[in-house]
Length: 269
Image (cartoon, rainbow, N blue to C red; front, side):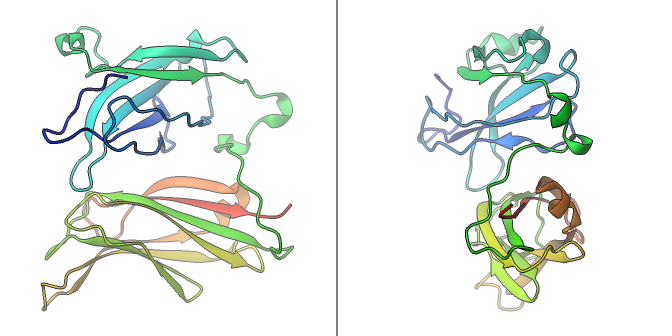
């Protein structure tokens, strides 16, 4: 509520990233609500808690930009020790500039974020293996081969890409000789694609890899119409075992470039 607009022209396009402090897992993200300073999401996320007595939930509100860096609109946090197990708790959090309680910049109003949090301790038989993310993956559609499944690849976004001649990036997936491409996002080092690709497989791709390249294209540069900005080769054994992985990878052959992708292995059983 009452977010402060970051863009001089027009309204802001807010989204929220959330994670547990000091957790290595990738942040969860809401959708983007375009041109809205009082956005409503009503989206639900699960995070695996290791130590409720010390861990803190962090919420960062950003202003989405098609080009360039996404501005921070404010942040807030909730110590998990404030939650009673199994009791949903709705909270209205004041958004701050920094987590420093003595920072005078925090006196300025930046709006509020309403969240509902429920801490659900695992029962003995529910402990996730190796504390992997425990979000259930959808079942594969009818007609999926019994020993196989549906491999879902969601290409979320990349950051700090660096083209020598131009930076108009798109992602290109190559798997079993099949190529799939995301759309091109022009003139940005931090593209956000949010595109999903599906491969129906007869058997588990345990020993296989998938190649994902980030390529920049330009119709104006006749000498260098295409340029590779980096790539990753992802082994699929992990996603077959864990059903779901959402990770940020450093791009090979890129100085600082990273890409975030999510993989899901959906089976009918």
